[in-house]
Amino acid sequence: MEYVSPEGLRLDGRRPMEMRQIRAEIGAVSKADGSAVFEMGNTKVIAAVYGPRQVQNKSQQMSDQALVRCEYSMANFSTGDRMRKPKGDRRSTEISLVIRQTMEACILTHLMPHSQIDIFVQVLQADGGTRSACINAATLALADAGIPMRDLVTSCSAGYLNSTPLLDLNYVEDSAGGADVTLGILPKLDKVTLLQMDSKLPIDILENVMQLAIEGCKAVANYIREILLENTKQLEYRRGV
Amino acid sequence: MRGIDLAALSKPQKLRLEKALEELESLSSKVNSDASVTVADSIAVNHEDAILKGHGTADLNGEVVATLCGIVERVNKLIYVRGLRSRYKPEVGDIIIGRVVEVVQKRWKLEINYSQDAILMLSSMNMPDGVQRRRTAMDELNMRIIFEEKDVVCAEVRGFQHDGLHLQARSQKYGKLKGGQLLTVPPYLVKRQKQHFHHLEEYGFDLILGCNGFIWVGEHIEAKDDMVEDQVNQSEPQVLLPNKSAGNLEEQEKNYTALETRKYICRAANAVRVLSTLGFNITLEIIKGIIELSLSLNLDIHEMLGSEFCVAVAEKEAERRKSNKKRR
Image 1 (tube, rainbow over the protein chains, first blue to last red):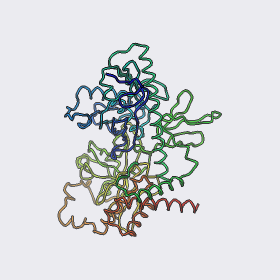
Image 2 (spheres, rainbow over the protein chains, first blue to last red):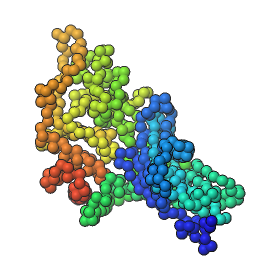
Image 3 (cartoon, chains in turn purple, red):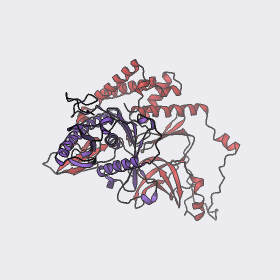
Image 4 (tube, chains in turn brown, orange):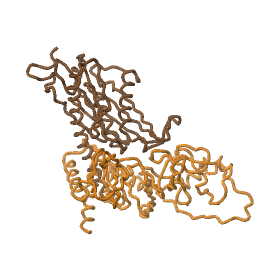
């Protein structure tokens, strides 16, 4: 199948190096300490953060750092064919783990000993790149909850189809069988915290694809930063003195 | 927009709200406008003199970087970031309200919106009978008479000890709260002040603004200072008997709150709710103002949570801040 037309347009009309439209909103869940909705095109994810709070399971309590937990789930209505998914299947446990590890790397856990932080992410609409969208949503929710972090983590995916590197794959491109690289970076520190790929790529092409994904992550970071800054300013002026 | 359901607003309401919020924005001090930072923003410092890095900052290759979203505050050499939406950070002497989650050996554990549960020791509590004495094993067994699980308790922060945050309630004004409503708001909206206990005589209810963002509105209770002097004739320590306050009908009759007072309690509670959805600072004067506004508009209690009143409150707040500014 042809994923990039001779005119250089993808199936949904984007250029190979173009991202989908992103939109973020802070404060979607009123009872949570921090929450956010993040959209990348048709992919829509909601994240809620509770904590730092008292550890529920005493045996997991740590005296030098906070416990970070993460739960990823997909709403039944999120995919094209409505399916009842069993909770805790392999895919969602794996993604939960990935998100937990990525977020734990940037949270300054040593500042909140004897406590736990819960991150819940749910996919409301799945159209490829749910992993990246979840990480971006979780970052926003954590920042909203006032949890100290080293840096914002942002994530974006890139792929390689029809011998062209493509940025931010959607569902059709994702399921085409080509390589799919999900990358998470700390933009300020300029470090990679997450790198996942299915199928194989030659090393020189991988470099190009990764570079493309890094550009995508940076674009997401700029957007997230704007949203957070606006939110902070709004909270401050509304509160008054 | 956080907290406000924009879809529920009609078009003119939306415009009025936007106007009021814009006014608030223009009123906020211009000095602070560039002080907002987000995570990983670098904070400009004069490298000539040494600086102290406070909360919410970190060092990155010799650069001061924020680790929180908030406002940069500078006090002499100290630079710190004041986070806005976060859980409560206790300071010694704060008056707080908590909910009992656990009764364990000689102590109650209280949920106070902090990263851990706070501890209220039996020994840092005044006995309800006002007698000063050693706590016996019997007292320990009867702890549930004083506070049970899910009770709402007002106390003061005593300090940190090796096992966590300790509270104390060594006065008649502290203790169990009943006959009212508990409201939870983000803690940054409550400012530390000289006075956190308020009695609104005209409406006949008590208002306690807990520093941890828990706010109590309840029936007025006359603070009785019954420091019992050493009773010579009392040979053995009096042990509290269970079921002393078990509600028989006469007891219930005595605890009955007048309908008028209950209405005012609800009004005050809704005023706090509106202020918290709008994200405005919560103080006694402002709450009083909102109650008066609702009375002058002749609104029912439930109408205070509607969009129209929300807009009216935003407009009033803008007006109030403007007049405050002029006076200065």
